[in-house]
Length: 424
Ligand code: ADP
Ligand code: MG
Image (cartoon, rainbow, N blue to C red; front, side):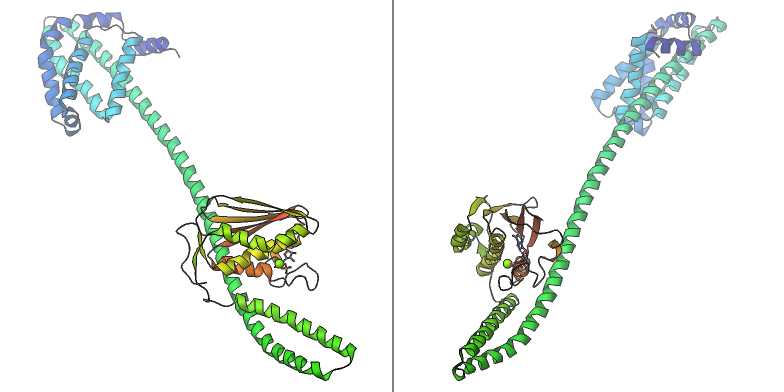
């Protein structure tokens, strides 16, 4: 409904018409005469209550209130009821909403106007009580119209604020939800890592025990084989003995790897700058890479040093580089990147364009003795050792691979200030 149609309807409902306004206009001289007293009485009344008194504490506000009350009083003497009038009256409600004055207080002020003005009007029309009472009714209607408009705009502003608050709360809720999800995912990852570290630790203990058990009889066999060397003259028998010794050598190597893995607290940590360590390790492999026509790409972004054991880290990188080289028998590209991860960890990414890992094999990669290589070429311990080393450094390893396309191993070391202080 348009503003003017709305106003006409209101006036019709209140039956507030030109006759009323004429009666009110006649009050102008009386109101002007009593304006000072009226405003003073109004002010005293406001001072008697804490919520209204609080508003008047500021002298500037007090001055404004008094000027506005006088203006309001005079405006009761036959105002022009148009859209400008409505807008001004609505503003009263908005101001009160803004200063935090509840409707009870400003509706009370309309009652106060009635009680102050009624005796005045009765006195003026003591000779014509009928006209006096019509004037009083006209005044009531006008005050009620004002109260209506002020109340409605108070409610509207209030609702707007509530709507804003509701929307803001909704947004805050979403933000909290997202933060919660992130925390939960983080927790899940941490739990998984802790579980993996635990599993690894128990496997390592088991394997170390086993290696020790096998190592002792192996030593005895090797000793006896050595003694046989001089006692055998038959070529065929010598060849067989050599094979036995070679195979014992292989087993010893595996055992040594396993024992190395399980030697706790032997090394000390120091700050390691990763880039030169990676370069040195890659140098060991340069011949192998060249032979296989494997191109090397390096991208080192500035990262802080990590706390670690140089030799073990070198072994870790070497294991991954060797695997990458093995995965590219017909050439390809090995890419080594150093960068900060999204979680502020130091990340080393080792990517190859090799055979990739079949999806079914992915969960088994880090298991001891899991290998897809020919007998004698792989022992299936490289990745298990690699995982043990990075875990000891407080980090973790991730793998991303697609069969036929290549593989990426990502090593994540605790970022600056996060390295755990345990010995390796
Ligand atoms: P090994 O190299 O002795 O086989 P590892 O533990 O180092 O043992 O690796 C286990 C297996 O994981 C490998 O046999 C191979 O199947 C797979 N693998 C490891 N790295 C890669 C890689 N970069 N590309 C493809 N497969 C890989
Ligand atoms: Mg390997």
